[in-house]
Image 1 (cartoon, rainbow, N blue to C red):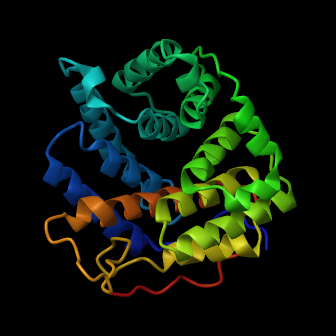
Image 2 (tube, rainbow, N blue to C red):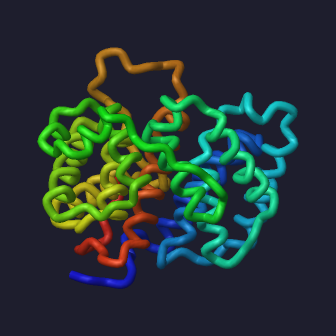
Image 3 (cartoon, rainbow, N blue to C red):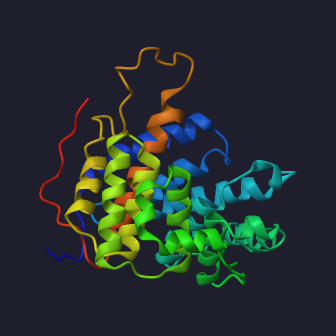
Length: 290
């Protein structure tokens, strides 16, 4: 089934999840900590059934960026540039500009160039450099290591690769922006399903995003995205605590350790799905539980 949009979430579902993320932003009460919830809300705002709220989001993006720029030691923040780059890309996609956000990204390139070769050749750094380059920020994308090239070429080794290698593999694939054929797509989708069944949601979602962006999505890919959709709760959050754990953690905040990361993964995945030229067949709106 080919479609030019994906209505995986209803307007009401988008609004409820956006409300949860907005509440998390207020709870953190810091421009720095607000980056991730804001990124999730921007992802949701790109979905076909979303009610446009870009005026509010653009103001908040400027507030967050100004907070980062005004910090006395921005390097100490250890911010992941990728959500910031993604936010900037989404804002640019609606023909808006946030000068403060652009200033941040203008600093990222030189910071990457200053890193040692072994850091610049990692998948994450290569992906960031490649994405910045596509956005028009001068950047050199380092070559992957020989070990990584072997992993990229030896498809049979993907099945036995540990999660850290799979995550790095996905970053390299996105950085190189080389289309995946049907076989590669199926392999990565099956691996993603295996990770999701073990509730390794971060790597599972990452592999699915890679497949959606570069591959030929099929039934296995759809099953993976459906699995994530089934993690939706009635209050708009995503994810479930392990009720079978023998010694559940009493001190950890489930919002920061599970629900927020899972909700961000879901929002990013659905945004990637909706942006694909060839959409996955969505049979029905998946019901909510818990």
